[in-house]
Each structure stands twice: as C-alpha cells, then as structure tokens.
Image (cartoon, rainbow, N blue to C red; front, side):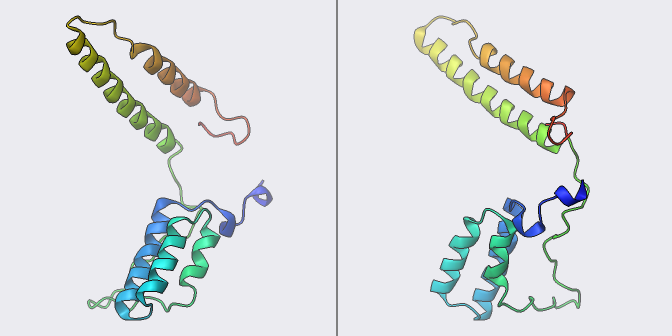
Length: 150
C-alpha cells in the first residue's frame, strides 16, 4: 500500500504550510533579499498554492533563516508527513462546524420568533439533526476507499 501514497510534492498544502512559506518570504523581505514587488508576487502564489510542491520553488533560492540570537536553530516547518495525527481530528472539526451552524440557525429562529411576536416551532432541529446523524455515521462506519473514519 505504501507505493499508492502520493509523493510529498503532490500532497495538498495546509494552511500551516502556506503560513510557514509566507513567514519565510516575510523574513527574506526584511533581510533585503526580496523587493516588495517580488515579495507580493511570491506571497500571492503561496496563498494560492494547492500542493506542497507549489510552495517549494517560492523559497528555493533563499538561504536558510539565520540562527536565533540565543544560539538555537530557527524552527522549521514540519515536512515529515508520516507524523501521527489523530484520526478523530477531522471529525471533531466537523462538529465545530456543526456547532457554528447551530448557533447561526438558532439565532435566526430566535430573531424571527421575536419579530413575529410568537414562539415559532424550532425548525433548526431538522437540518441540525440530519447533519448530526451524518457525522455520527462517519464515526461509526469507516470510509471504504481509505479505511479511515471520515
């Protein structure tokens, strides 16, 4: 199964990957290695990067950042994709989205009830219930393609 893995250069870039690249570009700007126009061009490309391989050329011609004054090496972004990540992280993140949706829909229900002068039926229960059922199903039955819970 290892030969089915996507090469690291074609892995999807995360917000943390884009932020690390943007920070290195900002450091290069303050060091005088990039002019403002080049920095803005590269920063725009970094923010629109889809895969990690799109980020590498943006900083390839820049030297490593200088060591910190206390003598320690600067913290580099993690490039090891084999680090263990909780299989439940995405599921918990989905529940955060669900909670945000619940707050918004309940707010709309509350405002319309107050404006109508009568307590309306709690309609957010239907979409939130369906959404919650889908999230619970994703936790119970793993994805057939990857074998992961999502």
